Length: 293
Image (cartoon, rainbow, N blue to C red; front, top):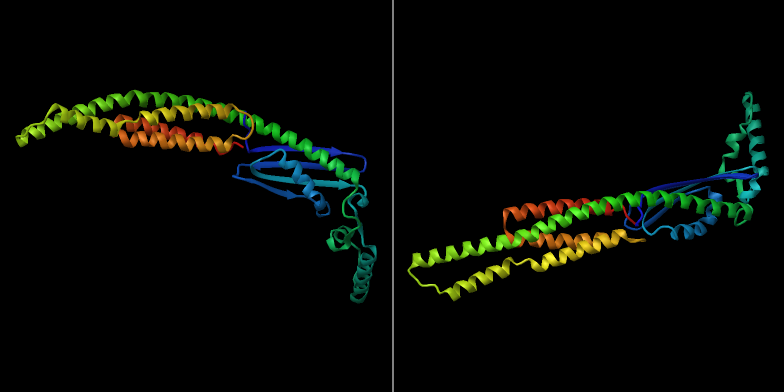
């Protein structure tokens, strides 16, 4: 079964020296668009993480967020520039003394200053990096599970709609011969009336030629055959595994073209009603397919 582009996944890892949480949210998109939110000190791992994600997704906008808590800054490959931090505190104490105000350092605000932290290595601790990678894989498993569940619901809905399309296509196929017969009879009657009014003669052979031309202009047998083939392929695509969204979207466009031609050729009220119903149902299918990968 195809999977949905919409899903959510989460995984939390708690170790002795650190903990981290991965969250993945996705919605439909024509292409694969990845957005990462993670601590800046872990940006060096983003390329590795992207390769893992690309193995699990082909299309969609995917927002990935990572939060990390550590009991040791060394795990992240960063350290506090204590010399600069101390100098800043000394300057603030001196200013407070001059102004004769009480000074109590707010270390929480001090450590939030990004320029006081420096990278000591290209990558964080290997153990933390390996744990982050494993956590991402498990979050992706959870995300894929939610996408499969929604994909199955979408596939079930599409199969029901395809069944209704088959009923409407069959009704169109049954109506076409009736319309053709009525048009032929009306054409013959109109031609005979015009010929009689003009005092001319009109041979049966000539009448047969005119009726044959009309029949050829109104013939939609090829469109009906191709429409049935498109419906077959739609059901095959929605029952297959892997990426089916683009293929389904293309087949729906082709089916729309064939049913639209049927309505334009026939010029019949009942047939127009059937083709409109068919196109309305087909448009609902298109909306659902936009969510499939």
